[in-house]
Image (cartoon, rainbow, N blue to C red; front, side, top):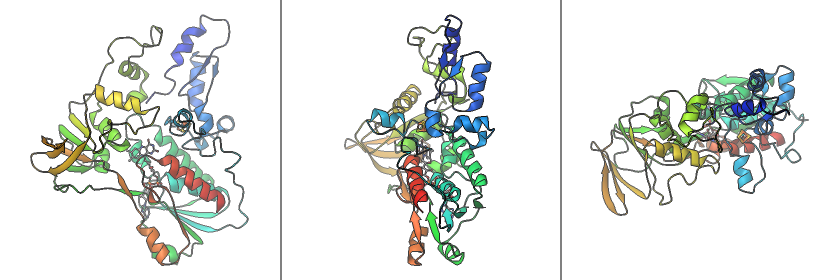
Length: 412
Ligand SMILES: Cc1cc2nc3c(=O)[nH]c(=O)nc-3n(C[C@H](O)[C@H](O)[C@H](O)COP(=O)(O)OP(=O)(O)OC[C@H]3O[C@@H](n4cnc5c(N)ncnc54)[C@H](O)[C@@H]3O)c2cc1C
Ligand code: SF4
């Protein structure tokens, strides 16, 4: 949620006071951002760390005018800092080869195959990119009219705007490696068998899980996809069932008002109490951060009795927890869901009945793999692999999806 080049004002100030070159860093993830920092006189040199994990050829591509082909760091921290702080080998969500260059390699295939990839989410896109680059003839299907899968939902969450860069990168890769695009086509096993592919890769993603709560079909119940897309109205008083990554994202979205602070350095500074004008020791103003929020009252709840939000990313989870608690979101754990009706959501907390008189109940209660197509292909004896959310539905795990897809495509 840090805006691009948010901290270059720090080096700008120092630059006028010292006689040596100063180097700036943090959230400078594309060449045009770096150029603007230098043109504005904010630093003499730009240091990039995470963007080099995302794409080791960033500078080369920039120099050759191939900016569209840059795999951009989306500032998720999921495979770099979260790994480093957990004692795991660092890598990158959008580039699983990072720090694995000796073990994850590929070159041109000696036996080009005709491959169908079904699903143009991160898993299908990663597979199609590597397989097509290796010389396989790849056809990519998606029922939707656009590529990106669930990343099209993620990019709508304030603070996750960078996810659109991953979709842009893959779009460029589809063109560069001449993948045949079949968008707006929900394909079935018979059609794939008839088309005579040598191999089918099923990357069909997930379906949201509908929890078994009496009243789940009530008109005040809204699924997270409809909530994010704005397909259904959301009331003033809202219960969000499920406090995983998607529950947090949906709560962020519905309690948010105005511009995203991830796109505005001033707003970001106000929201986090950073003092970019006076640069006090530690960088913070010491005054209360400005909280801009919608006037909704929201309860974010989970069945587990652990603190709400404990399972979020190590280096990013704290920001999400602080942000929502500053917005007055009520976090409730150890909830047993009883029923939903005209009055609201009835629950048991510690065995005691309680009713939340809400207008809307948003369901973020996990996902189930979408495997119907794979099962049908198996029945027909078609050679197929299952990848991404369709293989294992773990709420926020594009890291595993892209990693698995890349390994399989490198070996096919
Ligand atoms: C709000 C939100 C925020 C998220 N934030 C993060 C995050 O911060 N970090 C993270 O790692 N992950 C995040 N995720 C999860 C991430 O988006 C998923 O892990 C990832 O998209 C899974 O990729 P996939 O390719 O397996 O499936 P999907 O992205 O679900 O793509 C599957 C695609 O298959 C298509 N399809 C299905 N059946 C057919 C068929 N029969 N024919 C043709 N097409 C078909 C669908 O239309 C869809 O486009 C978020 C998700 C959401 C909803
Ligand atoms: S894991 Fe995420 S934050 Fe880390 S380098 Fe890759 S894209 Fe950037």
